[in-house]
Length: 137
Image (tube, rainbow, N blue to C red; front, side, top):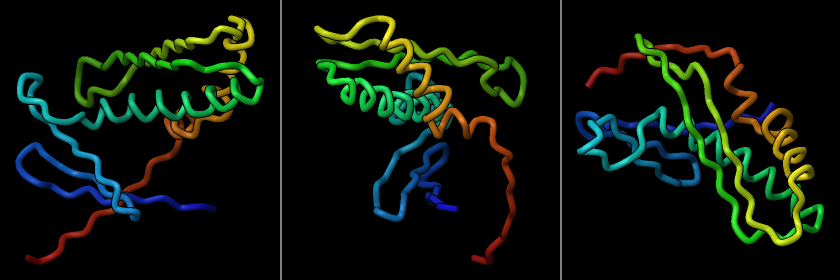
């Protein structure tokens, strides 16, 4: 089984950064809308889902020898009103700009991408475990 990991560290109140073993950094913040400098964890979840599905869909369209001029995924999540404010529904709208692709084949590719190949979509159904540790200063 392959493992992946990131380390999330607090930078300041409401500000964090996540770093993977290769040193790639993602800034995260929990500031109010007007003070936002980075995506929130829930924004990142939507971004991860949209980009994961996009990668597979684009690859499959290119395997079908279709021209991909532009590719956009608009992702919208409806959140629970209470705490925790988890997503109750997520809608992805896939937009392909291509002179030679057909609606039907694109719809099939997107369905395969989201329902079969997207690791993030499948992970939303995963069992989540956790542990804790306190280290002295």
